[in-house]
Length: 200
Image (cartoon, rainbow, N blue to C red; front, side):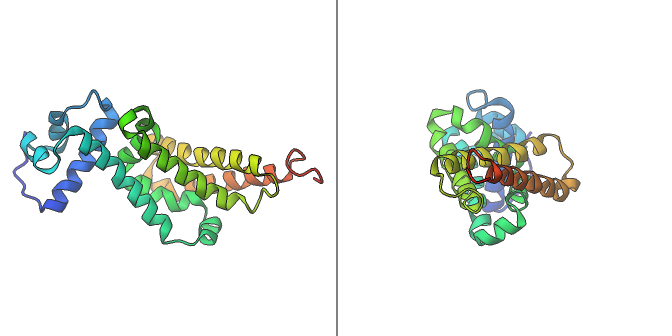
């Protein structure tokens, strides 16, 4: 049923993006129609098409919107502050604000060839930030550092997605702290390993 509420254009577009994220996450790209998005948003199909010309444009917009928000969140914080606070504490607010789009970007987009570029961009961004943080722990072994950056970055975002699946938002701060401690312990264990530091 179409909504009788008239929203400003920007607010309507934001509503459609969030509704589309939920629909795409539940049904996949191929299994979701613009009618499904309209139903999720409580609007007519015509309103969806007034804002987005195609399902492809809408799916890409969902992914780009959360990718931009993650970038903005990290751009406003110095790498040393991220290292001190912990990346989970910086990223979780964005993930919580857009839980469906965040999981869609990390878990599903790389399975969809037309949108794989955005998934790879996000994974590269996460790996690059993890590498910058881990350089403090792992020195003089570029191969292991790159592996550790991929591993720690994936652990971080997988953990956030799992918490979005199962967790109470009221406990976000506690879980972000728990994840931060776990990531630091993992990095410190790698740093002390004789496989990385022969003098350890």
